[in-house]
Image (cartoon, rainbow, N blue to C red; front, side, top):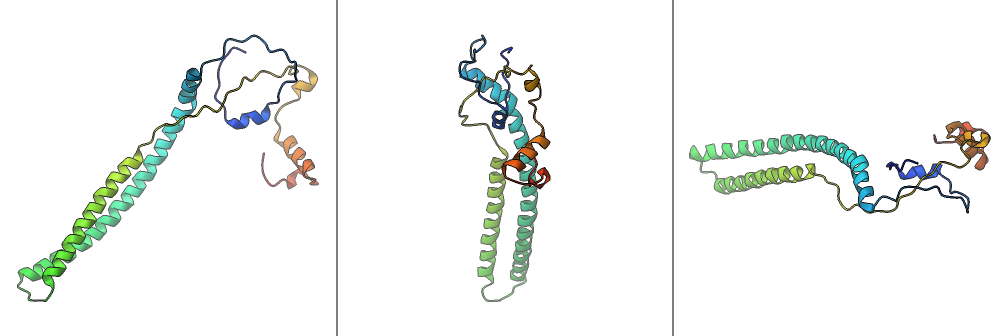
Length: 184
């Protein structure tokens, strides 16, 4: 009633019921503008969600980065050892046929592996970034206290998971509420 705006999950609408036709609507301050609503949504819901997503993404990218570095560096190390062995053979004066071709192939392979390592580093650096984008206004609602909230019947209208399980069990013709396969 004080005109405050609260951000809620859309499932909150499941706990509401429409007022009967002809219900008098009390006087309120003017509705907030779409910009005000988006600002509140951004500050109260989207920024905390963005921070949480950043933490998760940073952890995931760090894990992937560590594994990628270990794997590719092991492959590069193995190729460098092979290259060094072939280079040593050449310096020792080996007349093995195709030695120069194998050296060139290993050199090309090392170049490709090093480029791959750098490319993956850049890709992973980009994956660390995340931002809020493309906000779509789907709607907003004014939620008023139930007009009968102070009556004996209204005071009993509270959310009770046990009652909801019993109601669901009855609705699907089960004998016991415990037979409901999910928790409310």
